[in-house]
Length: 151
Image 1 (cartoon, helix red, strand yellow):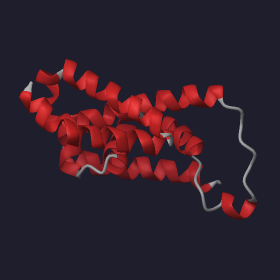
Image 2 (cartoon, helix red, strand yellow):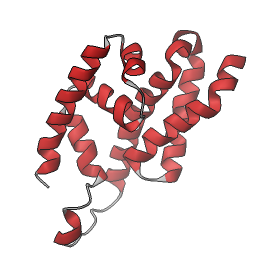
Image 3 (cartoon, rainbow, N blue to C red):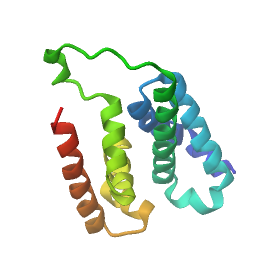
Image 4 (spheres, rainbow, N blue to C red):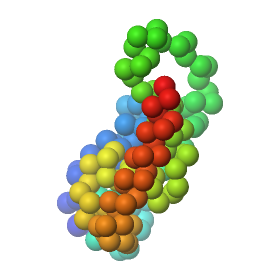
């Protein structure tokens, strides 16, 4: 238990950062981070060796679910002027694009680019080689570029 308590501040930062990048709301990101860490504590004997990656993946999945709930409750926003629309990628578009790629590619993209984990940590978290992580990251980013570039 003390190992979890020592790692808690760093794990919370990872979970919050991933969640905030997806949902864009401080309170919702805090809720997601707390839930991810509660799940980590419940499974600590299994996840302590790769806790940061595990927490990032769980918080990413929870944040996508939270974003879906938020999107259902809020009315659609008016479209921004065309000049700024091209410069800003909407979170909704990012979530839709993430949902359009395979689960493994989404895990790698979230862990690697939203949680800012190094490739070897991502490989440990998903139980594969660094080469496989690079492959899924490359293919995932390529698949994300198509729907996001259409904006």
